[in-house]
Length: 111
Image (cartoon, rainbow, N blue to C red; front, side):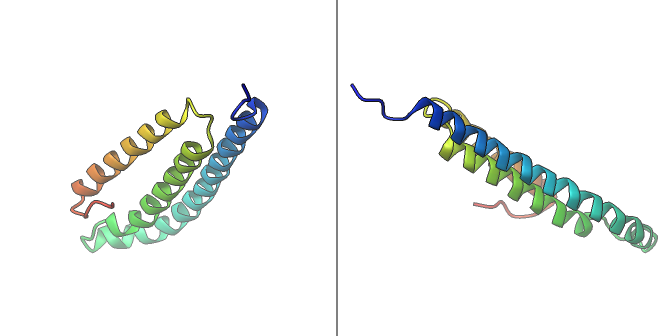
């Protein structure tokens, strides 16, 4: 009986998916540091005027969501067959929790 997927190819595909996740996380960290510097300038003004920090946080939340969802999507597609259902479940849980957090801030859920 022929193998459907070479184990080395499956392992390499999984490592590539994880590598993309790591690169995405690093991009997120760089953006976070940039925003920290930007917020340091804006925070005092927003709070002094009785404003809220929510508009300042939205770009970070969106970027984090994109990075996490993208990494989970890659794993769900490229992981070895036994891992795919687990990865899909983790991605679904991420969407559920993301929507719960958005609900706390009065934002519509994404579908």
